Length: 245
Image 1 (cartoon, one colour):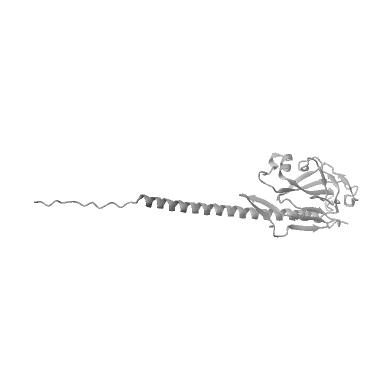
Image 2 (tube, one colour; image 1 turned 90 degrees about the vertical axis):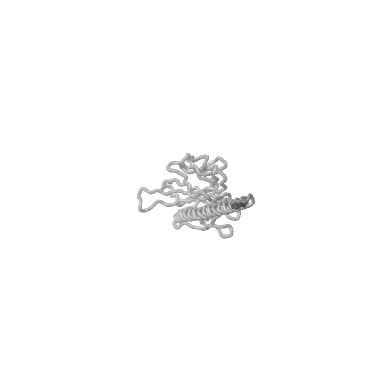
């Protein structure tokens, strides 16, 4: 009698549903961690780049401002009402071109260069303006980003003056209207942090010194970076022009 021969089949190896779910969960966790690391690294790099750029812009603009203040031969006294000519970049938030020296607005005269016979004295004014007001009056190619930005712009106005009467010997003034020929307003710095009562940005002092106290601010990915940091003193200088008599 032939014996029955039965072939025993070995069960095939495989993954159970629970093992598959565990594997998928681990994979998702790894992908999530990798994405989070990549995003954090990108945000950190963007913030570092913004801080570096902000610091560079701050140093360049304050160095230019300091150099100009040192050249002054006369300073427009605090409290003087100054009417700027009708050129882009001179209209304030109130819709006028009238500014008051000492309210984050300063004005000075730089003498003609003695080495250039065609040179004339130049009046410079420095003042703050919000971004919307700036964009409303500038041509398209000079507009700047305004959405979500609370920082101000620092403007430099300049206009040549006649040599007579001598603009370096200006008496005490209550009001002055500036000529329009050759006048222009330039953007000196884009990301100035709005000043407060304790840190007035631009001041004309009684001793003819011009003082600036500036911080710069830029928002990246919803986070504001400030230079110098709020725990430090602002970029500050009080300068009497070398030509002031």
